[in-house]
Amino acid sequence: MNGTRLLKPQHTSETKDVCRVVVLGYQGVGKTALVVRFLTKRFLGEYCPTLESIYRYSSDKSDEDDVRMDILDTAGHADTQSCWNEGYALWGDCFVLVYSITEEISFKEVQNLRHLLEAAKRQNVYFCVLVGNKNDLVYDRQVTTSQGQELADDIGCKFYEVSACEWNQLPQVVDIFIDLHATWRRSKQARDGRPRKSSSSTKFRQAIQKVISGKSSNVKKNDSHQ
Image 1 (tube, rainbow, N blue to C red):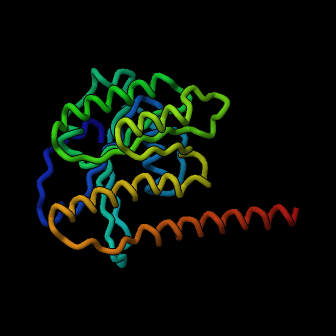
Image 2 (cartoon, rainbow, N blue to C red; image 1 turned 135 degrees about the vertical axis):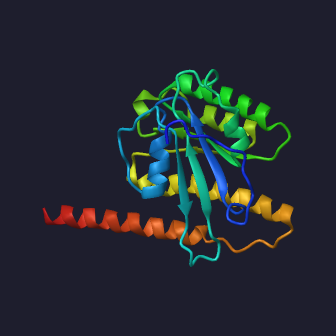
């Protein structure tokens, strides 16, 4: 939804177990590509950079550990600081900070976003991950893997370097969101004093890997018949 209005979360019985994830980053770094790859397992090359959308994700209801997320895909801007909306910080429980390994400016902007986020959240608990996207474009690399890891260590969060357009990296893209949700849920259950449920994320990853393996096998069979 363009111009999405963000409200402070109201923790009703329907929303209290929904993890709110905000995806932040410089324009053109592939935020929407990552979200769409996670949600649909597909890659779409072109998006409208001015759109801001909220997506609902819910795992299979038969799973012991029901994973539910509202994912806010923020609009891309050249100057994230001037376009910063503090409502992102108030609305979100978790944050995905995305930069492109091919654009040093996007790496600098994600550092600005980190400081804006910390200032807005103040002492409130939140969780984030740092994602370097487009690692398939190795010859255009401007940000090293070690730079990304150093920033993640400084923030105190997990670091992923992925390519949303590469089918064989789907498990890593899935891990970004599923692991972030698992961290949020563990913290929430500890605060609520509830025992931790066994997670279904392993089964989810195994299913994804099986799909990818099956696709790779079909490609090899087709090649052998040519």
